[in-house]
Amino acid sequence: MGLKLREKIMKDGSSSLYLDIYYEGKRKYDFLNIHLSNKRKSSKEDKEKRELAERLRVKKTNELYNQETITFEKKNKQEDFYTYFEKFIKEKNNTPAYWDALLLQIKSFSENKENLSFAKITDDWLLKFQKHLLNNHANNTVLLYMNCLNDALKTAFRKKIISQNPFTTIPKSKRVKKINTEKTYLTIKELKSLANIQTNSILKQFRQIFIFSCFTGLRWSDANKLKWSNIIEINKNGKKEKVISFKQKKTKQLEYMPLSKQAINILADVKLVSKNNEFVFNEIVNMINERSENAVSRKINREIKAWGKETGIKKNLHFHVSRHTFATMSLTHGVDLYTVSKLLGHKDITTTTVYAKVVDEKKATAVANLPKLNFNKN
Image (cartoon, rainbow, N blue to C red):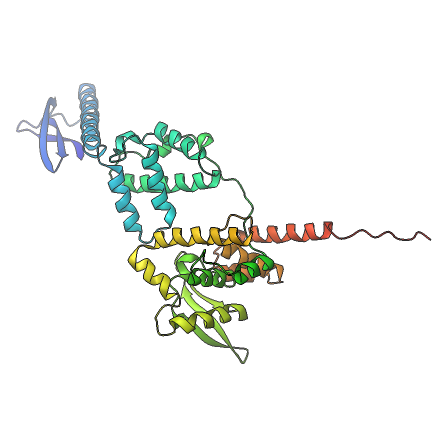
């Protein structure tokens, strides 16, 4: 849309003011029937006429803008959010399972499970949805869901599907805030219990990939796509060292992960079954191809919980606990914070300091539990 005030010189030298309007791909001219004198020096009367013409231009601009907004909202606000969100997730490619879970939460909250127009997603609707989530989920899970929903609505605004993101009108004081929680991790004793128990609660390759990640810190999205070609030998200080060479899915950075003896032993165990395959954890890759990464992610998390419960571990276990376990084990056994940060692929070392605090707390508890000795005062 474009609208400019212009003037046309008449035969007698005077000027006729008109609006040059470009709207919806068409150009038209609206003559205002306001004429300026042919005198070279503008008079007070001509100045007032120009001011009147400018007011008319502003008025016409507002009319067209309002009309454009009404047309825009009438056209787009009735579009189905569910259809948009499913497409949005698909375009993001291999999103974590919580994106699908968020859509299920929205459908559970909404009266209509088949259709939800953008018009209904207002700031008031978002606050009610947030309250609904807080009644059923932990605070930080709710924050994750709301951030994902905000991301989807930001994109809808950017693509001109909606004229405003309703999140922008919610005061910060009413938005859910992050609560610092303790990272769940496994001790060496608990890891041994998981590794030694004879169980049918979890698939063998699920056990292998989980424990492997406990000793490498790999994310689920990186571990399940690991190829044998990623396992290479490098020469370090005259000695050959086995490492994983891979590009992190989250950070897109090329990383080299040194392999501990335990990790190498797990790979040797896996290789007995899948040595002729491209992928290390080939059974998992086949599952993902048949279902989806999100579906397999949900399955392994269910089985990890059952595995932990059967072992007697009273912790909220899921695959990402393996990453926390690797970080705390490394720091506990003397690996410096900077190195752990690099091994985890963190861009900012402050992200890694959370684990350092956990280790410091463990040390403080250990010191506090030292036995007291009764010394003979004589």
